[in-house]
Image (cartoon, rainbow over all chains, first blue to last red; front, side, top):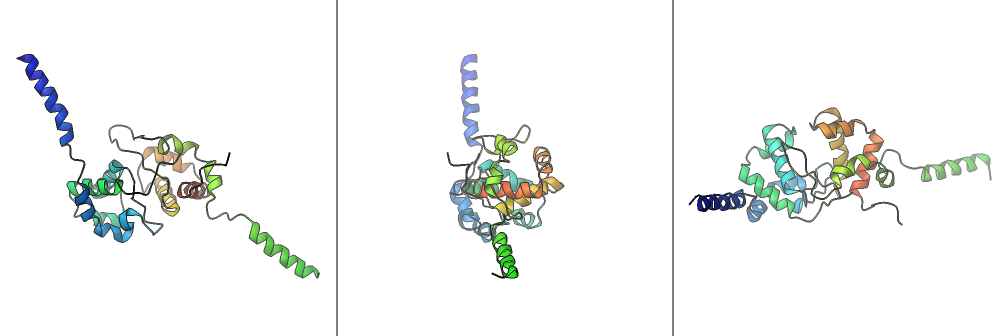
Amino acid sequence: MKKTMFFLAAVTLGVSFQVHAKGNFEAGKAKSTPCAACHGEQGVSTVPSFPKLAGQHRDYLYHALKDYKTGKRKNPIMAGQVENLSDADMLDLALYYSKQKGLSLKY
Amino acid sequence: MKLTTMALCASVLMGGIAPVQAAGDPKAGYLKTSMCAGCHGIPGWRTAYPTVYSVPSLGGQHAEYIVSALKAYKNGERNHPSMKGIAGSLSEQDMEDLAAYYASSYSGPAK
């Protein structure tokens, strides 16, 4: 009995990691319309002072959005933009932009 | 040729071949990446606990944005202990050169 319970607990723990939402690509794409104004189509910004988002790491983008939201990272433009973003929105946007072609690792 | 004409021609030519100091030089930037590559150049590298996230990719980013980010780390507008230390040691020219390197497709001297 103990063994079975332990096994079930372990399986549940493993499965729960998948449930940790990583975002929805299509939702992110739909929500990216206002972002394109500064960050460009698919996150390829054509304005040098607005960073390219295309291909950036998903968790870095999410972290940046969260920091703008909490005020840990201060930027008057971004602060306004993230006001209406929920945590799910930020996950979705981060996933969408991370899948675009653009930035790359450079040594 | 008159001396003044020669002098004028010489100064125009010198102006044309003199390296531009304000804008960044990717080749100079390549030589300055030793502090950057260890975090920004390693696949899968992430920040340290407790806030763990991927170190951002720089390849192909706008040079102007990279410079503004480095300046923000240097003056404390952006708060990150490692970046503050590193950016703090960079001159404006260093920042321009590094930014030009990451923004460009240049990846080192041809073998």
